[in-house]
Amino acid sequence: MRTHRLGRTPVRVTELGFGGGPLGGLFEPLDDDTAARALTAAWQAGIRYFDTSPHYGIGHSERRVGELLRGRPRAEYTLSTKVGRLLVPQEARGRMDESFAVPATHRRVWDFSRDGIRRSVEDSLTRMGADRIDVLYLHDAEEHFEAALRDGYPALAELRAQGMVGAVGAGMYDPAKLTRLVRETDADVIMLSGRYTLLDQSALEELLPACAERGVSVLAASVFNSGLLATGRPVEGARFDYEPAGAEQVRRVHRIADVCEAHGVSVPQAAMAFPLLHPVVAGIVVGMRSAREVEANVAAFPAGVPAGLWSDLRAEGLLDVRAPVGAAP
Image (cartoon, rainbow, N blue to C red; front, side, top):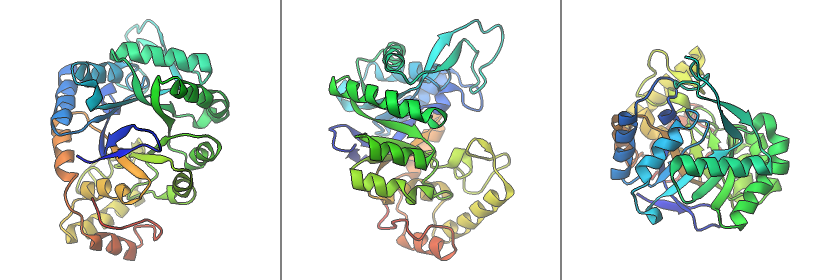
């Protein structure tokens, strides 16, 4: 599987990365054995970039990713996690976490201070049993952006200067705030959630040009927009950006599917191929919860997508005319 360098750093990622959100019990519970099989399938398929976060299942995702990677050669994979939420132990008393299907054994406390970020990194290293983190992101800082920019980013840059992490940036969904971060810092990479996909190309407005100008790499996450683009046709109960998809969104995906099928391409194939056509996109990160999902995504990932698909999507008004549509990977 091809790899690309992040910004000007030596850190490299495979074009297809493993997103650890589902390993935290996103949407529904997930047992350790199923998670382990998913991670093993990813490794066997050649995926060597693994992304996680304390937020995902209040530590479950980090623990599970760490257990898989602990016995693997450290030089062979790239590991990223995130900061901004500290996990504070509490009595679950039978309650479930508000965001993931796991017992509420911890609560999250927002903290983008230097001390908070250093504590978060130490906690993450302990949960994962890791010796270092290759990529570190400010996470979901939209509502805490000034603190993240003023205090959080300098703390990340300090960790990078000390050699504790290899590359730094932010993982968010707001293109405008990410554009500020790119222009006002020396970030290496951003993880953009759901804003450069077949359904939403709003990052073309300012963010992707700013990344090109500043030499910042982009990792496109949520390329399926939480599920709506993950199947050949929308299924009952499909989500868009974590919420039930609206009727207009469903109709649009059916139109995209019509064009894809005319070219012998599935919607998931097109959804994974599209972001990689932009020169600043170093890779995509796909959340996967089972070996079957890994195998399906890996099988679809390298499949050739004809250039005519993109021109037909443009002709139907389904793709921004500013989106680069060169040869698909």
